Amino acid sequence: AQSVAQPEDQVNVAEGNPLTVKCTYSVSGNPYLFWYVQYPNRGLQFLLKYITGDNLVKGSYGFEAEFNKSQTSFHLKKPSALVSDSALYFCAVRPTSSGSARQLTFGSGTQLTVLP
Amino acid sequence: SQTIHQWPATLVQPVGSPLSLECTVEGTSNPNLYWYRQAAGRGLQLLFYSVGIGQISSEVPQNLSASRPQDRQFILSSKKLLLSDSGFYLCAWGMTASHEQYFGPGTRLTVT
Image (cartoon, rainbow over all chains, first blue to last red; front, side, top):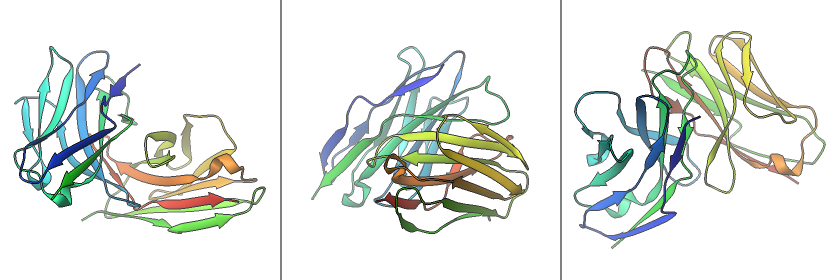
């Protein structure tokens, strides 16, 4: 069975500084990896995904993530944080061998707070 | 473009009352549909998914049920709500040919 770990419940960063939100995964075979963001009382918004190819993937709102197969990690990054980036971030995984239903397994979430 | 709707946005129901939450998707055909519950603003628990009309798979046994009467309609129901059913319910859609899921705005359910 697949699993996702987000080791930090809370990440605080000053506005303008780089940010990193960590994610590690466990899956049989090759993974598909995803990042989502959730603002208070809203649904999840898709940010980016890794399917295959370049280990560095770029997504919405200036976010990017680096896939590291040897470390089984998929950390979310942004070079310069904005106060508006403050939200709850979820990492998700799906094995490439999953069936047609394409179920995702989500991490527990990391609350990012960007301080002005 | 595709859009996903959920209603109602908020709901307060007494223990033992029935429940019906609705989700509809526009702008696509034959989507995979999903119901999640998010408790305490954190982790998502997959409740049900569907790959087609009338096809429902349950991930967690509980007093909830789901139905898909039409291609782009997904309904979450309960005959008798429990206090533990309180939470934020999210519907999502995706396609077999792609990989990501797209989420609706959610329904905040409070069981009193």
